[in-house]
Image 1 (spheres, protein in one colour):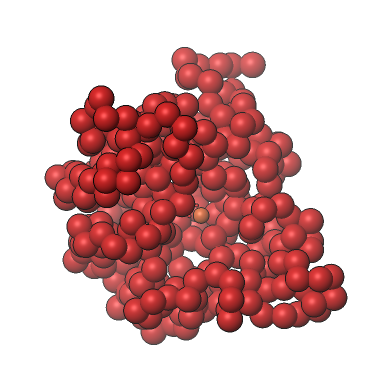
Image 2 (cartoon, helix red, strand yellow):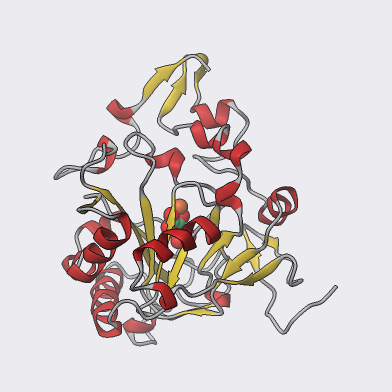
Length: 305
Ligand SMILES: O=C(O)CCC(=O)C(=O)O
Ligand SMILES: [Fe+2]
């Protein structure tokens, strides 16, 4: 066992193995930023593109401050600290806050700005568009997100959609940023099983259960609640950044398995995730329009499974 000077890292309450065969760091793709062919090859090779410092740090800070102001008004922070530090008030339990993102002009300006849209135009090789719905995480101390692929939440249009995960603060390991399972994007067995499912599909023959639950997957679209066990089964390493910094940009396709580290700090971890695809390709109706319908309700389809 080779273990490096890493703090203990957990995901979903499970301790990750720090051995270099099990855990590592994301490769930067800034070296190929000006070469669309090389960017595409990198995504085929790595299953993600990590672009440290791609966004303007001050623009990220403005978006962060606006979000922090809303959370401070709600009383989420310990009043003994500056609000920009986002130190959680005792007892706060929070994770998914898309309402904050969708009401935040500075955040939308940041993640749908010219620099981001022209990056996707260049990378995808045509006019890109983004989903109108914006996901946002305000993760209080506690568990991060369980391993999953995004396809099960947004696979009704083209499968060629890219998620952008953007840290809205400097996020050291103990605060819990995104982790990616190396080589998981190449797993055809996963693509042809879990990867064909849709969380808004209810199995008529087994009650109102979602298709993923009917096939034994836990939660809402979760692939596994055991990140170390999933890694043992699928191979590869869990990869993250030694420290995500404001300005970093991480994008990955729909079949890359990802999760996040648990938050063992005192801070609320802020990040957004947004989606981009070619404008010419079909789009998932759940995530577009002035008031995207999202999951559930009329979007649930019945099937025999
Ligand atoms: O930030 C997280 O905890 C999860 C983010 C995620 O699942 C995504 O970006 O698709
Ligand atoms: Fe995700």
